[in-house]
Image (cartoon, rainbow, N blue to C red; front, side):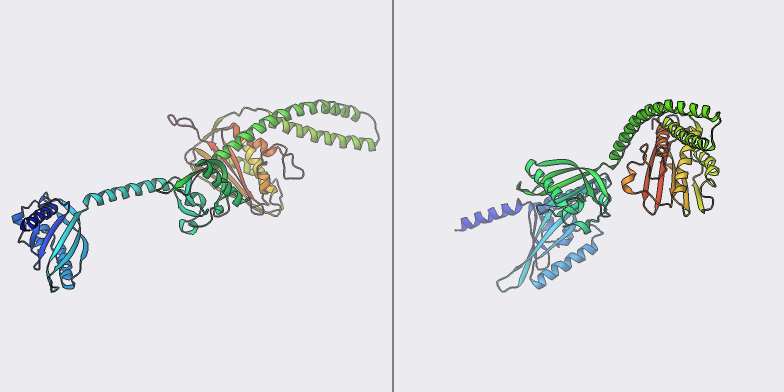
Length: 493
């Protein structure tokens, strides 16, 4: 029996000594009665140097630990007084003077008559765990900052019921919703305004069937704006591999769509230009004959009634001639004469031509906001003046009851001279905007529909861009961008 007890004690001591945690047995005065080998290896003290000493003196030997000792002594006193265990964390110094973060568990030891005779103190070194957690947290924060800076992508997660459960990575910036306002809402709120339920359902069914689904579609912002996107949907699996939702990644392709539209418009304009040139030449031939015969008839002695009719025919023929000239001007590939051009001066040259030529009895104010020291561009001043004159005439004609024209020039990202012409006129319906630069398309009763097409061609030949934003009843804004003269070493714009 004694042998068995001895063996059990040896086994017990081996277990304590080989435990990967600090184990201290303290008497009621908080002095160490027993310590295991982990305590020795961590503190650098030998068994004889630890036993009999106050545990705080052993573990907190640095001079700056007074407050720490007082706090831990209060914890120990409370445990003994109230006969209850305590869990807490504290930093100690190891044998090399390095700080170690220890998670402590304190349990009072009671006699048969419920008197506290000491405490068992178990300490688990969690320094590396916390360092890994901190490192991972920092990596997570950095990754979060990187991802939140990506504005062209939106990432959100939808559960099997179709509700949004995560809204991150550029989603707020692209779609306008705050995370707290959209979480747990039906994901249909983000999808096409036309038949939203069917659209989202078909996307989820495809993702469920194929594991991944990609399509070009549209998302709707909080304000109702429609954004074209490439949408990729992946299955979201839980740790057991069971489908628990779907991950949506949307890439904003607004700029790509604009570029595609500009290319499409340019191709249509080129095709129409060729067709228009052919038609103009065909019209010119019989028109030349008509004009010649009219000149001959004017020399004859005819009645007043016939002369009046001939004058009317001549007026209409002249009108056709002017229209043909504009068609030829639109279709003709006129090479600009590029020279160093100050865009502010070019706009200024146009203003005297427009100020009093339209609606002289109507009060129309012109407000100029010209940025000083804008770098020069390479441009054909005559052609650019024609563009600005055409746009200003349109602005005047859109304000029959008066209004305000704002002309703003600015340096756009050190790449382009930007010119904006804004009016407070009648505006243009949204369904007309996509055709506004098309030849022969006009919103005016007596318009030829060639003015803006010619402007588009001129700006295109200057390697620039022209865009229109308009709202019925509020006015229109034309924005033109023309590239600056490249400095040596700048590269190609």
